[in-house]
Length: 442
Image 1 (cartoon, rainbow, N blue to C red):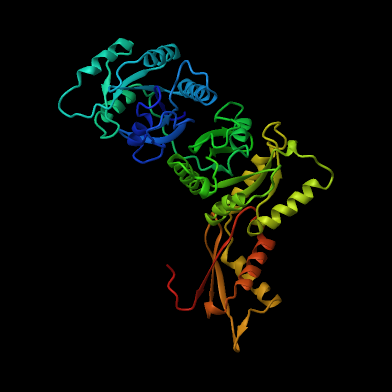
Image 2 (image 1 turned 60 degrees about the vertical axis):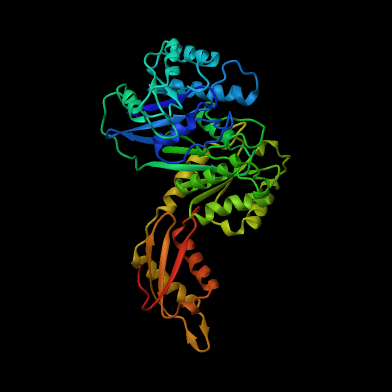
Protein backbone atom coordinates (compact mmCIF):
# COMPACT_ATOMS: atom_id res chain seq x y z
CA UNK A 1 0.00 0.00 0.00
CA UNK A 2 1.33 3.47 -0.93
CA UNK A 3 2.19 6.02 1.76
CA UNK A 4 -0.51 8.62 2.56
CA UNK A 5 -0.26 11.78 0.47
CA UNK A 6 -0.96 15.26 1.83
CA UNK A 7 -1.48 17.97 -0.81
CA UNK A 8 -1.05 21.66 0.08
CA UNK A 9 -3.28 23.77 -2.17
CA UNK A 10 -4.53 27.34 -2.32
CA UNK A 11 -4.42 30.44 -4.43
CA UNK A 12 -1.00 31.93 -5.33
CA UNK A 13 1.26 33.56 -2.74
CA UNK A 14 -0.46 32.44 0.46
CA UNK A 15 2.71 30.69 1.71
CA UNK A 16 2.23 27.10 0.49
CA UNK A 17 5.92 26.55 -0.34
CA UNK A 18 7.07 28.07 2.95
CA UNK A 19 4.69 25.80 4.89
CA UNK A 20 5.91 22.83 2.80
CA UNK A 21 9.53 23.61 3.69
CA UNK A 22 8.64 24.01 7.37
CA UNK A 23 6.86 20.64 7.48
CA UNK A 24 9.60 18.83 5.55
CA UNK A 25 12.33 20.43 7.65
CA UNK A 26 14.54 21.65 4.84
CA UNK A 27 14.48 24.20 2.04
CA UNK A 28 13.25 21.93 -0.73
CA UNK A 29 10.57 24.03 -2.41
CA UNK A 30 11.50 27.34 -3.99
CA UNK A 31 10.23 30.21 -1.82
CA UNK A 32 10.08 33.64 -3.40
CA UNK A 33 7.67 36.50 -2.82
CA UNK A 34 6.42 36.25 -6.39
CA UNK A 35 3.05 34.71 -7.32
CA UNK A 36 3.42 31.61 -9.47
CA UNK A 37 6.92 30.58 -8.40
CA UNK A 38 5.94 26.94 -7.74
CA UNK A 39 4.67 25.63 -11.06
CA UNK A 40 4.84 21.86 -10.82
CA UNK A 41 3.87 19.50 -8.04
CA UNK A 42 6.83 18.97 -5.72
CA UNK A 43 6.95 15.86 -3.50
CA UNK A 44 8.90 15.12 -0.32
CA UNK A 45 8.79 12.63 2.51
CA UNK A 46 7.64 13.76 5.94
CA UNK A 47 7.28 12.06 9.34
CA UNK A 48 4.82 12.71 12.16
CA UNK A 49 4.03 10.61 15.23
CA UNK A 50 6.16 7.76 13.89
CA UNK A 51 4.27 7.66 10.58
CA UNK A 52 5.95 8.37 7.26
CA UNK A 53 3.91 10.03 4.52
CA UNK A 54 4.43 12.07 1.35
CA UNK A 55 3.63 15.75 1.13
CA UNK A 56 3.15 17.69 -2.11
CA UNK A 57 3.47 21.40 -2.75
CA UNK A 58 1.39 22.63 -5.69
CA UNK A 59 1.30 25.73 -7.84
CA UNK A 60 -1.28 28.32 -6.83
CA UNK A 61 -4.79 27.71 -8.20
CA UNK A 62 -6.21 30.60 -10.21
CA UNK A 63 -9.73 29.31 -11.02
CA UNK A 64 -10.59 31.71 -13.85
CA UNK A 65 -7.19 32.15 -15.46
CA UNK A 66 -6.59 32.21 -19.20
CA UNK A 67 -2.78 32.44 -19.43
CA UNK A 68 -1.02 29.24 -20.52
CA UNK A 69 1.33 28.78 -17.54
CA UNK A 70 -1.33 29.59 -14.91
CA UNK A 71 -3.84 27.21 -16.50
CA UNK A 72 -1.14 24.50 -16.48
CA UNK A 73 -0.54 25.21 -12.79
CA UNK A 74 -4.25 24.81 -12.05
CA UNK A 75 -4.28 21.51 -13.93
CA UNK A 76 -1.27 20.23 -11.97
CA UNK A 77 -2.92 21.16 -8.66
CA UNK A 78 -6.07 19.30 -9.72
CA UNK A 79 -4.02 16.14 -10.43
CA UNK A 80 -2.42 16.44 -6.98
CA UNK A 81 -5.89 16.82 -5.40
CA UNK A 82 -7.13 13.70 -7.23
CA UNK A 83 -4.23 11.62 -5.83
CA UNK A 84 -4.23 13.05 -2.29
CA UNK A 85 -5.28 11.24 0.89
CA UNK A 86 -5.77 14.56 2.70
CA UNK A 87 -5.88 18.12 1.31
CA UNK A 88 -4.55 21.10 3.26
CA UNK A 89 -6.29 24.23 1.97
CA UNK A 90 -4.09 27.21 2.89
CA UNK A 91 -5.49 30.77 3.12
CA UNK A 92 -3.87 34.07 4.10
CA UNK A 93 -5.24 35.99 7.11
CA UNK A 94 -3.58 39.22 5.95
CA UNK A 95 -5.47 39.39 2.64
CA UNK A 96 -8.61 37.94 4.24
CA UNK A 97 -11.23 35.77 2.57
CA UNK A 98 -11.27 36.38 -1.20
CA UNK A 99 -13.52 35.28 -4.06
CA UNK A 100 -10.62 33.13 -5.32
CA UNK A 101 -10.53 31.34 -1.94
CA UNK A 102 -14.24 30.59 -2.27
CA UNK A 103 -13.70 29.23 -5.81
CA UNK A 104 -10.88 26.95 -4.62
CA UNK A 105 -13.05 25.77 -1.69
CA UNK A 106 -15.83 24.85 -4.12
CA UNK A 107 -13.31 22.88 -6.23
CA UNK A 108 -12.15 20.98 -3.12
CA UNK A 109 -15.69 20.20 -1.96
CA UNK A 110 -16.36 18.58 -5.35
CA UNK A 111 -13.22 16.40 -4.91
CA UNK A 112 -14.92 14.60 -1.96
CA UNK A 113 -11.63 14.27 -0.07
CA UNK A 114 -10.85 15.17 3.57
CA UNK A 115 -9.96 18.89 3.60
CA UNK A 116 -8.09 20.62 6.45
CA UNK A 117 -8.53 24.40 6.39
CA UNK A 118 -5.38 26.23 7.51
CA UNK A 119 -5.03 30.00 7.80
CA UNK A 120 -1.44 31.20 7.39
CA UNK A 121 0.47 34.26 8.69
CA UNK A 122 -1.03 33.96 12.18
CA UNK A 123 2.35 35.01 13.55
CA UNK A 124 1.32 36.40 16.95
CA UNK A 125 1.60 34.08 19.94
CA UNK A 126 -0.89 34.12 22.82
CA UNK A 127 -3.76 35.90 21.11
CA UNK A 128 -5.95 34.95 18.15
CA UNK A 129 -6.38 37.37 15.28
CA UNK A 130 -10.19 37.81 15.02
CA UNK A 131 -9.90 37.94 11.21
CA UNK A 132 -9.58 34.14 11.22
CA UNK A 133 -13.30 33.74 11.98
CA UNK A 134 -14.42 34.93 8.54
CA UNK A 135 -12.93 31.73 7.06
CA UNK A 136 -15.79 29.75 8.62
CA UNK A 137 -17.79 31.09 5.65
CA UNK A 138 -15.97 28.60 3.40
CA UNK A 139 -17.96 25.75 4.96
CA UNK A 140 -14.86 23.60 5.56
CA UNK A 141 -15.05 23.38 9.36
CA UNK A 142 -12.75 24.89 11.99
CA UNK A 143 -9.76 26.75 10.55
CA UNK A 144 -6.35 25.90 12.06
CA UNK A 145 -4.13 28.93 12.72
CA UNK A 146 -0.58 28.41 11.42
CA UNK A 147 2.56 30.44 10.85
CA UNK A 148 4.69 28.98 8.06
CA UNK A 149 7.51 31.38 9.02
CA UNK A 150 7.70 30.48 12.73
CA UNK A 151 6.12 27.02 12.69
CA UNK A 152 3.26 27.87 15.07
CA UNK A 153 0.28 25.56 14.68
CA UNK A 154 2.03 23.05 12.39
CA UNK A 155 1.71 20.32 15.03
CA UNK A 156 -2.07 20.84 15.21
CA UNK A 157 -2.19 20.81 11.41
CA UNK A 158 -0.27 17.51 11.17
CA UNK A 159 -2.44 15.99 13.90
CA UNK A 160 -5.54 16.86 11.87
CA UNK A 161 -3.99 15.26 8.74
CA UNK A 162 -2.90 12.20 10.74
CA UNK A 163 -6.50 11.57 11.81
CA UNK A 164 -7.44 10.91 8.17
CA UNK A 165 -4.59 8.50 7.35
CA UNK A 166 -5.59 4.90 6.65
CA UNK A 167 -4.32 2.14 9.00
CA UNK A 168 -0.56 1.66 8.76
CA UNK A 169 0.99 -1.37 7.09
CA UNK A 170 4.59 -2.42 7.30
CA UNK A 171 6.54 -0.60 4.58
CA UNK A 172 10.19 -0.77 3.67
CA UNK A 173 12.35 1.09 1.19
CA UNK A 174 12.16 -0.86 -2.06
CA UNK A 175 15.67 -2.09 -2.97
CA UNK A 176 14.54 -2.63 -6.58
CA UNK A 177 13.57 1.02 -7.12
CA UNK A 178 15.92 2.88 -9.49
CA UNK A 179 16.03 6.69 -9.14
CA UNK A 180 16.52 8.31 -12.56
CA UNK A 181 17.37 12.02 -12.96
CA UNK A 182 16.39 13.49 -16.34
CA UNK A 183 18.85 16.33 -16.94
CA UNK A 184 19.81 18.70 -19.73
CA UNK A 185 19.74 22.31 -20.80
CA UNK A 186 16.35 24.09 -21.06
CA UNK A 187 13.83 23.04 -23.69
CA UNK A 188 15.40 19.72 -24.76
CA UNK A 189 12.23 17.78 -23.90
CA UNK A 190 12.82 16.51 -20.35
CA UNK A 191 9.22 17.02 -19.23
CA UNK A 192 7.87 15.70 -22.54
CA UNK A 193 9.87 12.48 -22.09
CA UNK A 194 8.51 11.91 -18.57
CA UNK A 195 4.96 12.62 -19.72
CA UNK A 196 5.43 10.14 -22.60
CA UNK A 197 6.62 7.48 -20.11
CA UNK A 198 3.85 8.11 -17.60
CA UNK A 199 1.04 8.59 -20.08
CA UNK A 200 -0.27 11.61 -18.19
CA UNK A 201 0.56 15.30 -18.05
CA UNK A 202 2.65 14.87 -14.94
CA UNK A 203 4.88 17.89 -15.49
CA UNK A 204 4.30 21.13 -17.34
CA UNK A 205 5.27 21.00 -21.02
CA UNK A 206 5.62 24.32 -22.80
CA UNK A 207 7.77 25.82 -25.53
CA UNK A 208 8.76 28.51 -23.05
CA UNK A 209 12.32 27.58 -21.98
CA UNK A 210 12.68 27.17 -18.23
CA UNK A 211 9.09 26.15 -17.49
CA UNK A 212 10.13 23.46 -14.99
CA UNK A 213 11.75 25.15 -12.02
CA UNK A 214 11.64 22.47 -9.33
CA UNK A 215 12.87 18.88 -9.46
CA UNK A 216 9.75 16.71 -9.63
CA UNK A 217 9.45 13.00 -8.73
CA UNK A 218 7.29 10.53 -10.67
CA UNK A 219 6.95 6.83 -9.82
CA UNK A 220 6.60 4.36 -12.70
CA UNK A 221 6.53 0.57 -12.79
CA UNK A 222 6.44 -1.88 -15.72
CA UNK A 223 7.58 -5.41 -16.54
CA UNK A 224 11.24 -4.26 -16.61
CA UNK A 225 11.33 -2.78 -13.09
CA UNK A 226 10.40 0.06 -10.73
CA UNK A 227 11.59 3.58 -11.50
CA UNK A 228 11.42 6.99 -9.85
CA UNK A 229 11.89 9.67 -12.54
CA UNK A 230 13.13 13.07 -11.39
CA UNK A 231 12.39 15.85 -13.89
CA UNK A 232 14.83 18.69 -13.29
CA UNK A 233 14.92 22.33 -14.22
CA UNK A 234 17.05 22.93 -17.31
CA UNK A 235 20.53 24.19 -16.45
CA UNK A 236 21.48 27.41 -18.20
CA UNK A 237 24.82 29.12 -18.58
CA UNK A 238 25.70 31.11 -15.44
CA UNK A 239 25.62 34.38 -17.39
CA UNK A 240 21.95 33.68 -18.19
CA UNK A 241 20.99 32.78 -14.62
CA UNK A 242 19.66 36.24 -13.92
CA UNK A 243 16.91 35.97 -11.34
CA UNK A 244 17.06 34.34 -7.91
CA UNK A 245 14.54 31.64 -8.87
CA UNK A 246 16.77 30.40 -11.73
CA UNK A 247 19.72 30.06 -9.33
CA UNK A 248 17.65 27.88 -7.02
CA UNK A 249 16.66 25.74 -10.02
CA UNK A 250 20.27 25.03 -11.00
CA UNK A 251 21.00 24.06 -7.40
CA UNK A 252 17.91 21.81 -7.39
CA UNK A 253 19.08 20.04 -10.57
CA UNK A 254 22.47 19.42 -8.95
CA UNK A 255 20.71 17.99 -5.86
CA UNK A 256 18.58 15.75 -8.12
CA UNK A 257 21.75 14.36 -9.71
CA UNK A 258 23.18 13.64 -6.26
CA UNK A 259 20.19 11.58 -5.09
CA UNK A 260 19.78 9.67 -8.37
CA UNK A 261 21.15 6.26 -9.35
CA UNK A 262 21.09 6.86 -13.13
CA UNK A 263 21.19 10.11 -15.13
CA UNK A 264 19.53 10.49 -18.53
CA UNK A 265 21.45 13.30 -20.26
CA UNK A 266 19.12 14.77 -22.88
CA UNK A 267 20.58 16.39 -25.99
CA UNK A 268 18.61 18.17 -28.71
CA UNK A 269 19.16 16.31 -32.02
CA UNK A 270 18.69 19.57 -33.96
CA UNK A 271 21.53 21.33 -32.11
CA UNK A 272 23.95 18.51 -31.29
CA UNK A 273 26.26 18.81 -28.28
CA UNK A 274 26.51 22.41 -27.10
CA UNK A 275 28.89 23.89 -24.53
CA UNK A 276 26.10 23.81 -21.96
CA UNK A 277 25.48 20.09 -22.67
CA UNK A 278 29.11 19.33 -21.82
CA UNK A 279 28.72 21.11 -18.46
CA UNK A 280 25.48 19.30 -17.62
CA UNK A 281 27.04 15.93 -18.53
CA UNK A 282 30.16 16.87 -16.56
CA UNK A 283 28.10 17.32 -13.38
CA UNK A 284 26.72 13.77 -13.69
CA UNK A 285 30.17 12.37 -14.51
CA UNK A 286 31.86 14.13 -11.58
CA UNK A 287 29.11 12.84 -9.26
CA UNK A 288 30.00 9.29 -10.35
CA UNK A 289 26.51 8.48 -11.65
CA UNK A 290 25.62 5.83 -14.20
CA UNK A 291 24.72 7.75 -17.38
CA UNK A 292 22.84 7.31 -20.65
CA UNK A 293 23.11 9.95 -23.39
CA UNK A 294 19.62 10.42 -24.84
CA UNK A 295 19.39 12.26 -28.17
CA UNK A 296 15.83 13.64 -28.27
CA UNK A 297 13.74 15.12 -31.13
CA UNK A 298 15.20 12.55 -33.55
CA UNK A 299 11.93 12.72 -35.51
CA UNK A 300 12.66 16.35 -36.44
CA UNK A 301 16.04 15.63 -38.08
CA UNK A 302 16.49 15.20 -41.84
CA UNK A 303 18.25 11.84 -42.06
CA UNK A 304 20.12 9.60 -44.45
CA UNK A 305 21.72 6.21 -43.73
CA UNK A 306 24.83 7.87 -42.20
CA UNK A 307 23.19 10.58 -40.02
CA UNK A 308 23.05 8.49 -36.83
CA UNK A 309 26.67 7.33 -37.15
CA UNK A 310 27.86 10.89 -37.75
CA UNK A 311 26.02 12.21 -34.70
CA UNK A 312 27.30 9.34 -32.56
CA UNK A 313 30.89 10.21 -33.60
CA UNK A 314 30.28 13.91 -32.83
CA UNK A 315 28.93 13.07 -29.37
CA UNK A 316 31.90 10.79 -28.63
CA UNK A 317 34.25 13.60 -29.68
CA UNK A 318 32.51 16.37 -27.70
CA UNK A 319 31.88 14.23 -24.61
CA UNK A 320 35.22 12.41 -24.78
CA UNK A 321 35.31 11.91 -21.00
CA UNK A 322 32.09 9.84 -21.20
CA UNK A 323 32.97 7.16 -23.73
CA UNK A 324 31.44 4.61 -21.33
CA UNK A 325 27.91 6.05 -21.66
CA UNK A 326 25.57 4.34 -24.18
CA UNK A 327 23.82 6.60 -26.71
CA UNK A 328 20.17 6.17 -27.67
CA UNK A 329 18.21 8.20 -30.25
CA UNK A 330 14.56 8.86 -29.31
CA UNK A 331 11.56 11.08 -29.89
CA UNK A 332 9.56 11.99 -26.78
CA UNK A 333 6.90 13.43 -29.11
CA UNK A 334 6.24 10.22 -31.09
CA UNK A 335 7.52 7.69 -28.53
CA UNK A 336 10.18 6.34 -30.93
CA UNK A 337 12.63 4.05 -29.00
CA UNK A 338 11.39 5.35 -25.61
CA UNK A 339 10.59 1.77 -24.41
CA UNK A 340 14.27 0.84 -24.95
CA UNK A 341 15.25 3.25 -22.19
CA UNK A 342 13.93 0.97 -19.44
CA UNK A 343 16.24 -1.95 -20.29
CA UNK A 344 19.17 0.46 -20.64
CA UNK A 345 18.47 2.10 -17.27
CA UNK A 346 18.28 -1.30 -15.60
CA UNK A 347 21.47 -2.42 -17.36
CA UNK A 348 23.66 0.59 -16.47
CA UNK A 349 22.33 0.54 -12.90
CA UNK A 350 23.40 -3.11 -12.59
CA UNK A 351 26.81 -2.26 -14.07
CA UNK A 352 27.33 0.57 -11.57
CA UNK A 353 26.44 -1.84 -8.72
CA UNK A 354 28.82 -4.62 -9.88
CA UNK A 355 31.22 -6.10 -7.35
CA UNK A 356 34.42 -7.84 -8.51
CA UNK A 357 36.41 -10.12 -6.21
CA UNK A 358 39.96 -9.22 -5.23
CA UNK A 359 41.16 -12.51 -6.75
CA UNK A 360 39.69 -11.67 -10.17
CA UNK A 361 41.14 -8.14 -10.03
CA UNK A 362 44.62 -9.37 -9.20
CA UNK A 363 44.46 -11.94 -11.96
CA UNK A 364 43.61 -9.09 -14.36
CA UNK A 365 46.41 -6.96 -12.84
CA UNK A 366 49.03 -9.71 -13.38
CA UNK A 367 47.94 -10.09 -17.00
CA UNK A 368 47.88 -6.31 -17.64
CA UNK A 369 51.34 -5.65 -16.14
CA UNK A 370 52.81 -8.59 -18.09
CA UNK A 371 51.46 -7.12 -21.34
CA UNK A 372 52.49 -3.51 -20.67
CA UNK A 373 55.31 -2.98 -18.19
CA UNK A 374 54.63 -0.36 -15.46
CA UNK A 375 56.51 2.92 -16.05
CA UNK A 376 59.97 3.75 -14.70
CA UNK A 377 61.56 7.05 -13.68
CA UNK A 378 65.33 7.50 -13.18
CA UNK A 379 65.82 3.76 -12.97
CA UNK A 380 63.07 3.26 -10.37
CA UNK A 381 60.19 1.07 -11.61
CA UNK A 382 56.58 1.22 -10.42
CA UNK A 383 55.54 -1.94 -8.59
CA UNK A 384 51.82 -2.61 -8.14
CA UNK A 385 51.30 -5.00 -5.23
CA UNK A 386 47.58 -5.63 -5.51
CA UNK A 387 44.20 -4.13 -6.42
CA UNK A 388 40.87 -4.37 -4.56
CA UNK A 389 37.38 -2.93 -4.96
CA UNK A 390 36.47 -0.38 -2.28
CA UNK A 391 32.92 0.54 -3.31
CA UNK A 392 30.13 0.71 -5.88
CA UNK A 393 28.05 3.45 -7.55
CA UNK A 394 30.51 4.13 -9.11
CA UNK A 395 32.81 1.08 -8.98
CA UNK A 396 35.81 2.24 -6.94
CA UNK A 397 39.13 0.40 -7.10
CA UNK A 398 42.23 0.90 -4.96
CA UNK A 399 45.75 0.06 -6.21
CA UNK A 400 48.58 -0.40 -3.71
CA UNK A 401 52.07 0.34 -5.07
CA UNK A 402 55.61 1.21 -4.04
CA UNK A 403 55.52 4.88 -5.20
CA UNK A 404 52.36 6.79 -6.16
CA UNK A 405 54.42 9.40 -8.06
CA UNK A 406 55.47 6.74 -10.58
CA UNK A 407 51.83 5.81 -11.28
CA UNK A 408 51.43 7.93 -14.39
CA UNK A 409 47.93 9.01 -15.49
CA UNK A 410 48.33 7.16 -18.81
CA UNK A 411 48.99 3.88 -16.97
CA UNK A 412 45.93 4.48 -14.76
CA UNK A 413 43.87 4.91 -17.92
CA UNK A 414 45.38 1.73 -19.37
CA UNK A 415 44.33 -0.25 -16.26
CA UNK A 416 40.86 1.28 -16.37
CA UNK A 417 40.51 0.21 -20.00
CA UNK A 418 41.64 -3.32 -19.07
CA UNK A 419 39.01 -3.46 -16.30
CA UNK A 420 36.30 -2.34 -18.74
CA UNK A 421 37.45 -4.78 -21.43
CA UNK A 422 37.25 -7.68 -18.96
CA UNK A 423 34.23 -6.83 -16.80
CA UNK A 424 32.19 -4.43 -18.96
CA UNK A 425 31.07 -1.70 -16.54
CA UNK A 426 29.25 0.03 -19.39
CA UNK A 427 27.39 3.21 -18.54
CA UNK A 428 29.27 3.96 -15.33
CA UNK A 429 32.41 5.96 -14.55
CA UNK A 430 35.23 4.19 -12.67
CA UNK A 431 37.16 5.63 -9.74
CA UNK A 432 40.78 4.49 -9.33
CA UNK A 433 42.63 5.46 -6.13
CA UNK A 434 46.40 5.01 -5.85
CA UNK A 435 47.95 4.25 -2.47
CA UNK A 436 51.60 3.62 -1.81
CA UNK A 437 53.07 1.33 0.83
CA UNK A 438 52.67 2.88 4.27
CA UNK A 439 49.61 4.96 3.41
CA UNK A 440 46.72 4.72 5.83
CA UNK A 441 43.58 3.05 4.52
CA UNK A 442 41.06 5.73 5.46
